[in-house]
Length: 134
Image 1 (tube, rainbow, N blue to C red):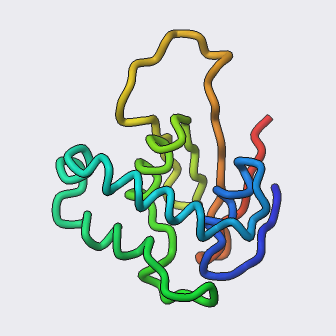
Image 2: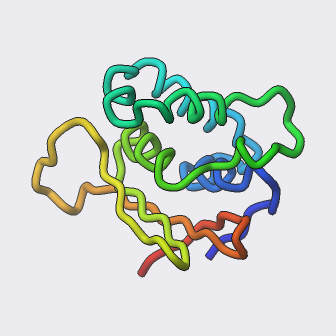
């Protein structure tokens, strides 16, 4: 397990760090996910319907400091966007909800050795950490 800074941006810090960036790139991860939703709006409108505006709003921040609860990375909705944007399998682990998220577009080529699988864990009811599965 890799622990990132425990603040309201920790979920996005994990995503940035899992892709080889410094965890301080969390705002770029937010922007990339926002752009993903906006550029593929037909896909996400069909999936999220009335929650789409709430999701896009949660990605937009006005400052780099602490964020209110509605700006935190939410399960399960944002996980679909993460898996699709980065074309990977995302496994978020939580005490009461463990799901696997696959990209929403594209076809699998059958070669499992090429699959990118990342895991994150939700601990203490308020903090995301990187989890490395063996």
